[in-house]
Structures are given as C-alpha cells and as structure tokens.
Length: 175
Image (cartoon, rainbow, N blue to C red; front, side, top):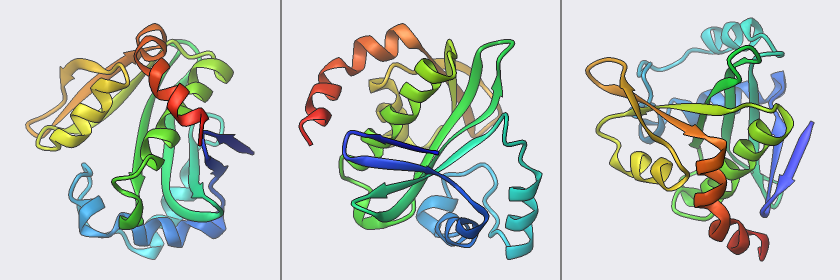
C-alpha cells in the first residue's frame, strides 16, 4: 500500500526495510528522543518486525522523490475506541528541517481519520523535546496525561486537526 500526498509517498514497511529503519533508529539524534534508548540489534529489530500485528499497526517508509528519509506510523489501532498512537522520525538529517516531516505527518493523520475512521490520535512525546511538542500542538494535539517522569501523551481529535491544518494543507498542495 502507498499513500501519495503533499509531495511525499508513504509506503508500507516490508521486511526488506527493517535494517535501514534500525540504522536510522540507532542514530543518536533519533534514539535519544525515544522511550527505548538502547541501540537495537539486528535480531531485536527482526523480532520486533515479525511480532507486529499488521491489522493493528501501520508502519510507512517516508519517501521524498523516491529517496527513503524516515518512518511514520500508526500503532495499536483500536476500532473499538477509534484511537491509535501516531509517531514519526526522520532518519536522514538532511530532511529534518524541511516540509517532509509536516507533509508525512498530515498524510498519515489524514489516513487515520479518513480511511481508518479513527476519532483521535495519541502521541507519546519526550518532555524535553520542545520542538516535537510545538510541532504536534500546531497539528491539534493537546496535553492529555503524564506517562512517566520523561514522557507525556498528547491527544488530537479530528475536528481540531482539520481546523488547525487548513492553511498548511493549502501550502503543501502547491508542492
């Protein structure tokens, strides 16, 4: 499956992607913003990938002009509560401060709300990662609850997401 929007392509992750994702994930600028901060081995990555329930977890490789630059996901999708946890990381430093993270995030959130018919999304954010907090708040996420001493959950409902991203969408559609 592929989603093409706003100048990016999101392609479902396959087994052939797991080593690239592991290498991205193990970079300090990615890893140190994650809850699990140890370096991931090839065996751990393989086990993680093969333990995923593909009906409840959607991991997409982010492509910009056919170059793989990161990963965006919806995990623990619940049709009962109409929620999922969303996440993103950019593995190629050259794309960190570009429109790509915004475009990929809006694309996956559109998929969650339009195709999966979810009502809200959660994002687990490291409290010290102010850039991620501001980024998510601009998309409609609001503080929901403290998870532990380092992480908080933020929640976004569809109506807030749509209202706050209208102008961003118009700009992104020009790309």
